[in-house]
Length: 178
Image (cartoon, rainbow, N blue to C red; front, top):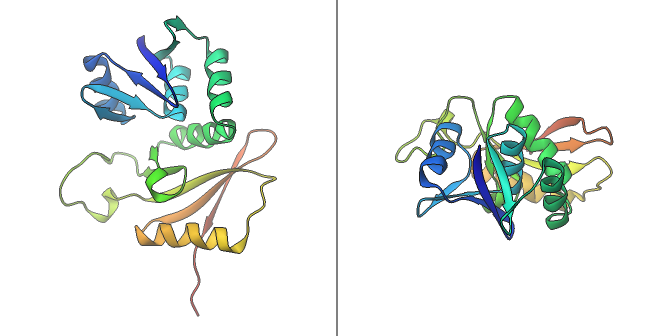
């Protein structure tokens, strides 16, 4: 099992060979100078798949300790991870949606999200996904902003709604023009 270090709000795999395996074969994280930087949902998913173990201050964390630590760093981690895990289990390649103002972006199965140069329509971001709890209320302005951001990158906008039983229901929202 690969060792990964918790640093602030991300997890790093410092071993360049292990980092490259996880990055290029499994499409997790972002490479920075030979170190793989993982988001918290990516790291938790790899912990659950027994691909990595997380160390904090040199101490190995159990699965439960890792989850609790991530929840303490991000109050929405539970629902973000539930949606992330569900999307990965469905076979999607899931990357951060931070620069698009949402939690995740997805690519279809078999697409290399790191491909450089010209891409076919299928190789671009397919959906922007925002993880929310079922009790969250949204204004029309908030929803409109998210849908327009998705349109700007030619992607669909989807809410991943997590209920009290940790089931996820997806709602795709489109803009209608008369």
